[in-house]
Image 1 (cartoon, rainbow, N blue to C red):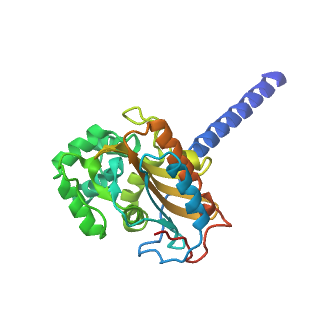
Image 2 (cartoon, rainbow, N blue to C red; image 1 turned 180 degrees about the vertical axis):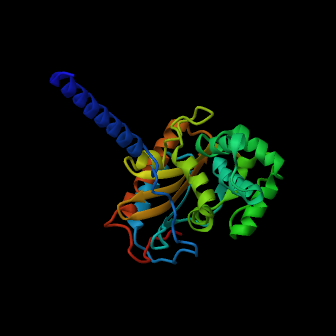
Image 3 (tube, rainbow, N blue to C red; image 1 turned 90 degrees about the vertical axis):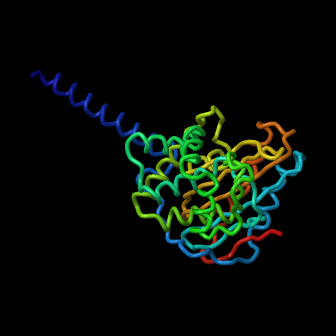
Length: 304
């Protein structure tokens, strides 16, 4: 073999390694947490806190209030490493969950039959990542509908959670931001590894276009670009209101956080305006998730 041929093959091999390395880098940076996992130690209730991020709350409320249409907003951000609340605004007020209730559906299923496998695993992942309503409808009917919410509320001690008035409308389930945070604390600190990984891997692979075609990259995914996240979004209409909820886990240089921003407006608002407002509100919380802004102990903001 000629010297030139050997050199050519070496160059081709190096180029291939570079290409593969670049592809791996792109995959790792494209969203989610990769192989790092979402285990946390905040099993107990997060520490009660004093006012800290009041300015973040003020900024978060501005884009929602500026659009009128009778906005309702609830926020809670918890530092799962310090087990302390960072931001708290009307966090105990129940709001419609829309698809966020799919977390309870998945947890209830795993309580009764363990981590799904085969076709059922694919279906439940689709329900969590792409927010597939068809899967949620089937599991809701098969496992008792409102009883799912009641079982999980009792198990997790969710103080502000209740089933829908219409048993068939799972999206009208009511939960407070603080209760959704409790669900994330259970996922990260209470579930065994296999169950936690199943749920969070689905959440961190959420595609931009949901199963119904809705752009679910509002709130957390758009407000925290370049940050590892695992989300369960919610959108829909209930009781004459348009509902948008962005919830999930976010990892920054200062630690791992559970973030919940729940909003609703009169139905007269359009989706474009509502999603822009909720995303702006979520972005206003960045100071609470940065190394300088996040507490090392147990300080946070509260709202009335």
